[in-house]
Length: 337
Image (cartoon, rainbow, N blue to C red):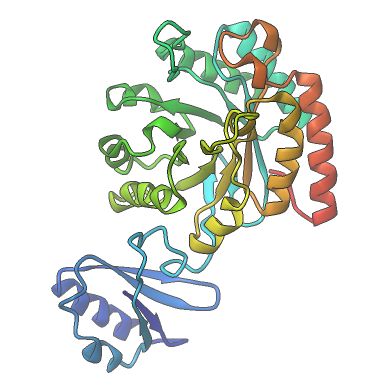
């Protein structure tokens, strides 16, 4: 349920309404928007007497929210959410480029790649320390040592760090990480999501390989219901009957998610296609569709990469791609970073 407040409502009457709602056992979230202020109710609203609410001086109207996700719903939060990350912001019309290797392999590799990414225009650094792999025999990442190397790369470049968590037991390693990524395979790991909801760090939540947009929003709701509202939704391609690409990038997810939710939306073209030559056009398409961020894999020597070398750009190719992204953003009047 959403209670739409009258413009210039008296503060005392709004506080009185909030107290009345709390007595009914629901959580009342007051949200001040640029054009409209609301109170969003989370919990069992069946016992709420709508006539007693509409009778309040500060209330303009009441709207029922039919979708199962409440906190993530744009009806609940009309204005775009803007997330502060290390003195920079995601959302609100700017574009961020999160770039770096699939896996952190060595100090030399991650620092060399991070410097090249920053010089080309990347605003954040990605890199896998804990790696979910289809094969148990494939490189699983450096774990805690990989986190330490990412921090060194941040010290060298100033780029905020994005890296993936796989298990609740590893959460202590992420105390100095700027954005915690939840991978596609963990999108419905509800115990992990609830634990991440208890921290204040921004969460980059990737859509599962075979999950709907509503299921992605419900996973965001799990995190938000525990108190953490700093969620970035990530479209990274879904599994379809098409075999010519690794996955199928659902470009329609970008505008649809932004219509349904106030949360920022990121696109990962590297995992979506799994083909280097498609990363650039998919990146440009994502910018046009309205993405708030792109997550692009870059490796200083993709041919020797320990994981997913076939979908990682060289620094030179990333620089070329960034040049086209900048030109497009200039044309659209969109700012990078």
